[in-house]
Length: 309
Image (cartoon, rainbow, N blue to C red; front, side):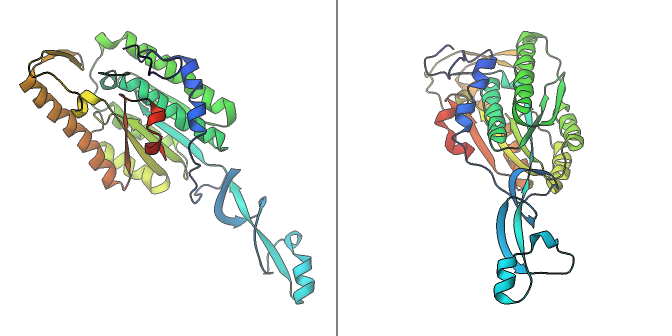
């Protein structure tokens, strides 16, 4: 799978700290996501709530209870009526990554494993949050482990995420042949995220969608009431039916803890099931009024920046 088209420091299978640190350059190309703040937290994000802050908003007539320190004496003297200044209040938004590193993502037919692309994407979103002054946390989920990282600011936020992704990805690779199915592990992750996410948080979901069961919908609906959600679906060219395959072939594929040998007919059946899983995830996000962005593991992330904007 080693390919000259791979991102810097990446071999497409293993994950290193260097390649995740290099995602900072991609994050600089992303715009800041501005939205009305829901949380009462001081920080670097300009909210639509007017109060005391650094950025001037407007002048209005003085009202009983206004801070006398905000009186605009020039306007007051000119009009003969007391006026006060209003400012756009700066708010810090917690950003949380729900990163799915289930065994189904340890699949790659072209450039890299889907799990590697998921790690690159999650880290890029994390870097973007840090660069815009937000606090960053994460919940990283596998069948056997859930790692909770409370939101932290600046380098502490991104470095704790990078370390956790690298270590958990390595453990998953080492245990790929000894996995134990856990059909509701992402439901448990969503339930834990409800406790971790404070009102006003921005939550990015990064997954291949195959482990989100219908029971996850209720937990995500609760999150959506007080937080903003965004979703990324990680795909692979083989799972999308995008590869040119010969008329006759036998294709070895690992699915879960099973080794499959697909021919033309069985591949079509397998492809239908893969696309059905992806469609189910997209439909779940639609019920939450959340847009799902598609990211392909067969292309470098810098070739897909349009999906991140």
